Image 1 (cartoon, rainbow, N blue to C red):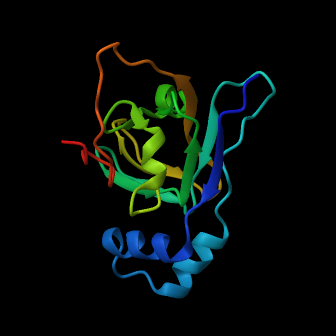
Image 2 (image 1 turned 135 degrees about the vertical axis):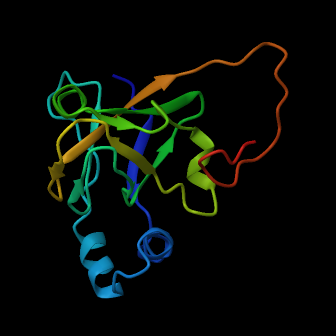
Length: 167
């Protein structure tokens, strides 16, 4: 198995900054508590392709409600690889939990963005009943995939952000 990436936590300062944008009324000491409880993504078994990403704080979503989850995680990825984010199959099948952009794409150069490559995932409860998932539970999975480029590609632009930052 080729080792092509490393998960890390973003700095507390970055997590706090991002948290304040989405949840402005949460006190800093509570944000610190959430941050300190962040777990790095992990595979469940030796044969698993997906790395489970865990909720830093519990969520409760009514039907058709959405939330942006600040994972507190970033991924240093080798050139020629991408991290795809998918719903965990159990939550998707049983509860109709969906990623708002269907599949999240974490490019290799996102790590170097001014937001430290903080992976954020917007999810929606498309099911007919409320959904509660506790802190520390896996809610999405990331799979590393190789990618190629065309022979005549000559892009030299540099990324600085996520969620549509490349135009």
